[in-house]
Length: 227
Image 1 (cartoon, rainbow, N blue to C red):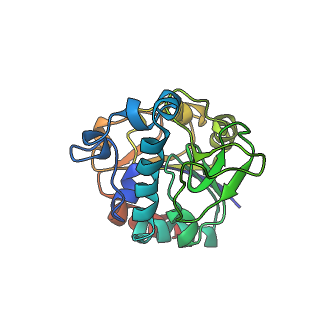
Image 2 (cartoon, rainbow, N blue to C red):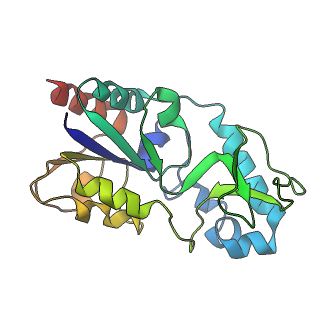
C-alpha cells in the first residue's frame, strides 16, 4: 500500500469558516502577533492570550469539516494517508481521518505552563486564569507560539521523506520550519499543490499545481488517485 503524506494549512479550514491569520480580513488585522501568540505575550497579559484562544475555541465549536476534509478520508480506501497539519483545529479528526500529526498544537487541548508534556483534553471549554494542571501550574493553550520549538517537525520530516505521493493543501509553505518539509520529499515523488495561488507559491521537482480552493480541488484529485 502506497503512502500519501498530506500537508495542510489554513486554506483547508477557511472553507469551513475558520478565520485565517494572514488574509486581508484575518485575525492579525485585529490582534498583533506579539500580543497573543508569543511566550512574551503570555508573560505580559495571560488574560488577553487566554481570551484570544477561548474565542477561537468557541468558534471551532460552530463549524463543520468541508468537502476537502471528507475527501481525504476517502483516500484511506486505497492508501495509507498521513496528514501533517499546521492547523490547530480538529476538523480532520471530526471528518474521520485516522492518522494526523499536528505541528502547531491543538486548540481543544491545554497544557501545563511549566510541564510541557502534561497535556489534557478540554474540548471547547474556556481556559481561565486560575485553572491549574494536576501539578498546580496555570494551564495554557496547547499551541506552539511564534519563537517556540516545533516538537513534531522531525517526525514530519521523516514522514515526508518516505512518502510515495505528497499533497499540499491550503498553505503557501512560507512559514518555517513547516515550509521546509517539501524539501525532504524525494525528487521523483509526485507532488500536488492545491491552492488558489498555487503558481505563485513554491517550486519543486514533479510538482503539479492545482489552482483551486481545497473544497473543489481536493475531491477532484482524490477521485483521480482512487482511479
